[in-house]
Image (cartoon, rainbow, N blue to C red; front, side):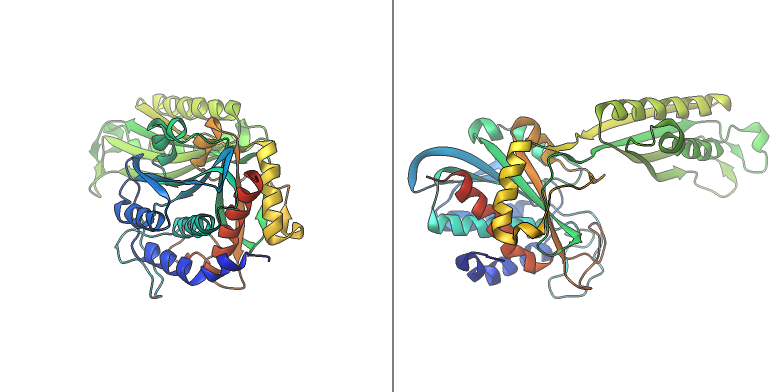
Amino acid sequence: MPIPNRIADFVPEMTAWRHDFHAHPELGFQETRTSEAVARLLEGWGIEVHRGLGQTGLVGVLKGRQAGGGSIGLRADMDALPMPEINDFAHRSTNPGAMHACGHDGHTAMLLGAAKYLAETRNFAGTVHFIFQPAEEGLAGARAMIEDGLFDRFPCDAVYGIHNDPTMPLGQVRAVAGVVMAASDSFGLTVRGRGGHGAMPHLAIDPVLIGAQIVGGLQAIASRRADPLASVVVSVTQFHAGSADNVIPDEAEIRGTVRTLTPEMRDMAERLIGEIATGTAAAHGAVAELRYNRRYPPTANHAEQTERAAAAAAEVVGARNLLREAPPVMGGEDFSFMLEKRPGAFLFVGQAEGAKGATSVHHPAYDFNDNLLPIGAGYFARLVERELAG
């Protein structure tokens, strides 16, 4: 893989940064230590730093040697997940209940590596905006940065991001135009019945029984209500009710997630969840109240920018390691908000190497593969040099 020699020289530094971030994970909008560490590094390389976008986000601004040219945005997310880590290596989390289980520590380190290289070489004309974003994991940090004036203050002709993928071989790149990740929504249902003694259920209206029937009914959305060729995921992930073995509670709480690829399917899923819940509850003399939260839109790559990103990636990993067709991933990603505002592309880069590490993100044994660091940094750097060629 033709990684620039200078970026290869940075591997020990990138690895040290990544391990430090991994050992000190911070949750969404709490990335104060990470953000400050990133800012100090950027400033040390002569990059202009603007703090406080989206609370803990920041942007580094670097101009090339040559005047004129366009502008490009490169984005990395910084936050961790609220989950414990079971790894026992030296850089494991020192913050109980928080873990870099999605590789954002690696994304940040890769973009830092590209920033250091570009600050040294400046072999481009125009402006690079290094976007270090907070709160990707469910809190829409990208939207928060946009609302704080991200693209007004730092105009970008195009914006690009990448994500590691432990299901793909190290160095393989998936560059696909169109929808590549699903819309991510959440829902909550409160089933209100009538409590009573567990030995006398006929005198109560049992929200646990009703809730169980609702859960079963929701599974029919994908299997019986949606077109078999359409994509929809409805997953119930929480069910809370009761406080004693012999008491039928007044209420039950059901929560879950919905993933879709089209506006039509998104509308249908929301409507059917409400109809199934209220109808099932009414049949038993109870009431169900739905709260539906549209969180992230689908992540949709722009065709022209995907071609440009693929060309840059091919120069780093080789054309044989490019995947140009692949089905969407049903996970969600708030880079989608940036792609709604500016043209761009979101690529997946494989990190699987033998039997090393967990085969899934969001797993308590996950760890970012440090051998991916120079590949990601090299891709970002080459993309800038191609897109902002003098």
